[in-house]
Length: 208
Image (cartoon, rainbow, N blue to C red; front, side):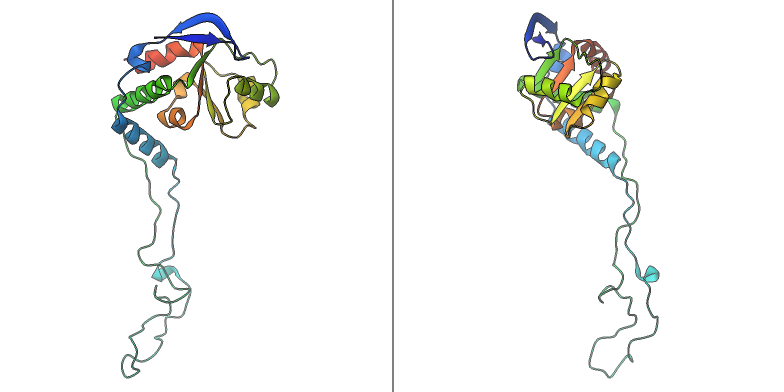
C-alpha cells in the first residue's frame, strides 16, 4: 500500500510512502480493540473513591428509642444508611483497576485501529514537521491545512520540543512518539498525521 507524502502546508510532494499491509491493511479485530481500549481507560483510573461507612460517620451511638411499644420500626443508630446524613451501605472503597493484557492482543488492536483509519482515509503522511520555535499558531495552521479540527493525532519518530510545546495549548491535539502510539489515541482522533520517518519504527514494533 502506498500513500502520498505531504508537506506541512497540506500539499502533496509527489512522493509516495510505502506502508506494510500487515500493519496498515489487515482485517480489523473489534474484540482486540475493545480489550485494549478497556485496559487503557481502566489503567488511567485513580481508584481513590471512598464513601464513609457506619463505623466512620460522626454521630451518637445512643439508641434512638426503645425497642418495642412505639408502633414504629426498630432503630439502633442515627448513623444508619436509612437516615439522612448517615453512612452509605456497601459504598465504594479504594481499589486498583489495572489488569494485564497480552502484548500480542495489544499489537493486534493497534494494527486494527490503524487499518480502520487508513480505510476511512483519515491517515496522512507528512514529509517533516519543521518548527524552528514553539508557536501554537504555526501548529494550528498545519492542522487547518489538512482540514483537521483540534481532535487530531501527530506521530513523531523522535522527541521534538518545539512541536510538543506548540501543540500544548490546542485542546484535543495530541502529539506522540511512534513508540508511544496506542489504540485509544488512534481511534479517538478524527485524523492522523504520521511523519514519514515514524512509519519504520511503527512497522518494526507491530509487524513482529
